[in-house]
Length: 330
Image 1: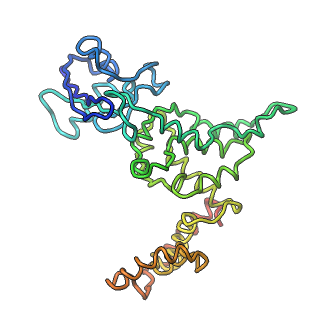
Image 2 (image 1 turned 90 degrees about the vertical axis):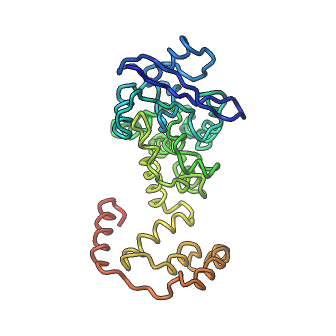
Image 3 (image 1 turned 135 degrees about the horizontal axis):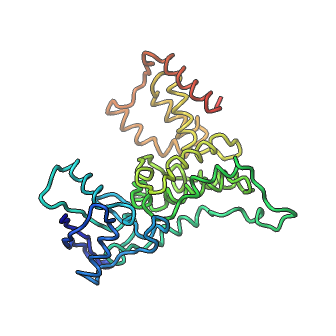
């Protein structure tokens, strides 16, 4: 069948433009197969990364029709079918190929992954140094302990999750879902001796887990089912359960939200601000920072002074407590 490939081409610090190539392909051909043919038969100047062609190395990640994926894993037939489900039948199907997001373009489909690797290094994705000292005997793990590392160990560092991360797009300090998925591997590794230090680090500001916007894109595009968002949530649970981790606005936000909904069925905004931002008058700097906005809301009638609990509060409280008991949170 005939397929049109629209490739976003770009040189460093130059505007992007789409270039069109047409190929006769089989439904089972991968996108990488087609890119190879374009380069070998039509345009030798086209730049893209590749290596293993077996969905192991992660080199050929790019945006295929708007979503980050591995070119060696996606095939033409399934991609055309997906487009037809969205747009209906077309005379000649078109497949758009673009470089990964959240990273500057070097050329065409090749991006500079320097920030990707630096953010990974920031979470110290290796067993703590004290645990690496030569022991009297080797570090042994039970099958159960080892099984906790399987899912995060599947990560091939392709950059798909980093490319789609909304939090990374607006916050350059956020380390990204790939780094935090690897971070959870360290937190749950029975051989690591720096768990509390790690949790304190991942709890800081919006650099770590609290910078995640929970958009779910990282899970949806991961080609290896690492589910980075799930791993980020697990780190949050570890932080909340660990009494040694210093208190912070994100921690108070999460705990305060749940407690206030348990009390009244929905959020008592004045009490929520006082509890989360002001830490019940213990964080005067936080209160001063939010005071101007509070006055504006009060003047415009958007800051309720009276709180009316919702109907069904008892049922809501019962549901929350059931979930907490099941998770062992009390």
